[in-house]
Image (cartoon, rainbow, N blue to C red; front, side):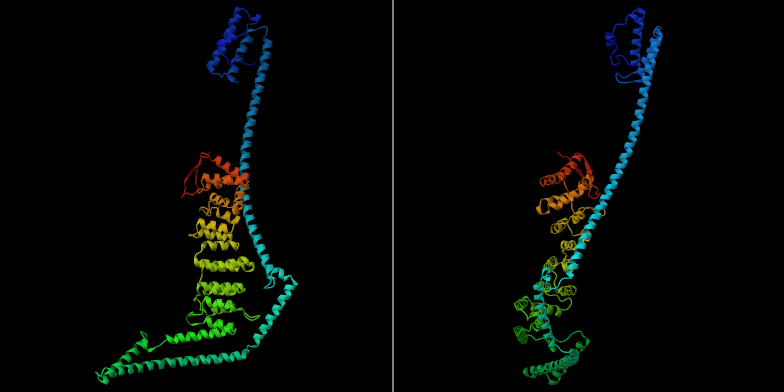
Length: 586
């Protein structure tokens, strides 16, 4: 049984009440009906029943009233009891259905909660798998590059020295190279004919050692005679002075004081505390003698050079006194001539002589070091460059390292060795950015990143310099990732903005953003929130650049993260340099 007009007040109920059927028109029945309505209104107010919607209390009130009506109407008791029974059955059925619905909702809520936990677990596992996949892909790319390089080195090892790949397959070029090798062999045989046997060389070495021993003995005797001569001259000078001064002191006294001075000089010589400079002369010529000696030396060098004896001329110039012929002018002279067919180039002879005659630690000048290294690289004698650098015979400079780096780029077969030598030079010159660049060129990207992290003098500007000279997505990813509790070397927002502003580097920035978006929207959001160096304007400008480059997906992803963070306050994970960023995106 439904509630009749339960949402209206008692006064409105009386006004809109329909006339009682004729079967209940007696005054007594009218009063009964009126009392029932008053009872209903009073009970609803007392129990505070809601005006609308199903309510258990309202149902009990009407049920009680209906029982009164049944008890009053004797003639219709059976019919009204049947109606009441149907009404009660309907109410019980509705209650049962409501209870089942509540149970179903609880079960559904429990299933939904369990499902959301499973989804989060799967998403977390998927993120871990994506990270592992990225690491594997990066390592696979590095291994593939290493395999390609090893294949190239293996192919180059089968090439003929002095010929390109194309010439190695050209019969005419091979015939020409064969003739050159035959001529070179003939020249070597001619040179061999001028050589002596091993026995004769041993005999000459013995004679040379005997001559050197005799020279040493004569040198000692010469020094002794020089000292004796100086002593006698010392006495002679004093006697001459004594005669010129009129013999003021007795001769015996003069000789006694002179001999005493000589004895004091001998004591100083024996104790090693001092040597009278007038008693000895340098073995090298000085003054006019030195000028004449250098003139004769220069004439000898010119004679050898003009006669085509370039090897002897090179050794003579390299051993010149005071290094007067160890300069760029002499190097230019050797560059201006050509040797005999099949012989060593004169420039290479002079460079070798400079290297051989220089003692370990005795460095060539900076300009001469550049010329010598350039000559060695031009003629393929990298082992001489290695020897010179290891023995510290060159003046290290940035230009010297650049020459080796450029040679490595043009000659893949010696790339690793040249870059390693260049790195040694850059380390001596404290050129940290070029050290990192060379490590990246050798494929040591992770090592280069560790070097940048541990080098205190390595700045973000240096990182950008390396990235501009060797654009690489793995390198960019490592530079923008936090390393062991410390901030990343480069800010993602700033570096992407800088790269997008340069047409030749736009693709690299887009690849980095694609890698973030490809890992899920949460990864990009985490990167943006942890990037404390980039403001809202930087990310907004980046979104505009992506849109201009027809990369609407990247632009929308960035703007979506900014909109989600509008009006929030995000704390940086860096505890020492933490600061609040208030995002108010309009």
